[in-house]
Length: 370
Image (cartoon, rainbow, N blue to C red):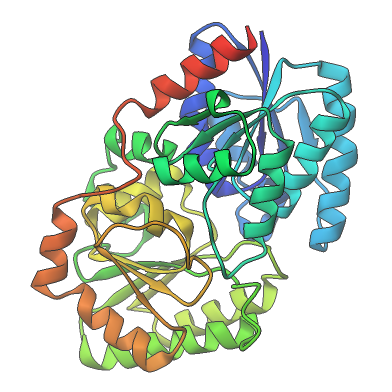
């Protein structure tokens, strides 16, 4: 059986790679179809991570440019690839604009879509609309929790084809052998320890009160204030995605790193293993990445979720929230280091966690399309 796997970002491949391997190990011919950020040099050229995992993409959609240009290229290129390859289904994860184009291409070519992580809500980004649109284009739905399963069913989807699998990223955490601390630090040229916070901040595209540049200015000012009260605090930044042109945002990060070379490191993409390893040794996470909401609680680390981007998502008690305001960000960083929040995070209670997620996903996909 041919099963296509669509991947367009460094983040989604990290989540999808164990599923792709498991499907391959169980006899499926896995066809990786890669696009967008994987071919962006400024964001790490993460196509190399796919190849290092033993997969050679059958489609390489390398178009760069505006979101509309990327989405249009994905629609055309994936339609051509699906017509040529005729897989039994295509797996699409998440809620990005180009993933919506891929789902559209699949429907037009008569290829069923398996949608992972539908039913969530993220009120501060256009991803919220794209996610629900992908749901309506999909044939099989693998949701991250029971609340999200119920929401998909309320969208008039067949309950027998909406399965609560838990979040695939938790499988990675439960089965990760982290890079030893000394080796990781040598690789990064930066010490990641309990005084380090990992920061990933994307554009909150529906925040009409602040531009992405203003959101970043506020974030960096908040961190600057936290530096004054936490003399040992360090920040490990990963670059934002390309929901909007990331160039000015990356420039702000690099200027901030130059101001604080001993306390700040910027990395375009850590890759799944370095990312999860860094979180194992760090004191916590800040920003507005969905990984902070969905996965980091299972690492026993507290998270400061900033701004409106992830508002509406179910979250663990160890994930706290603040507005995109420099004073609130500084105070939120203070809270991350309190014994109370560290103790709460250590309980690792996560509403997205299931130990059998990978087995459920693989079994359902194979049985549905065999």
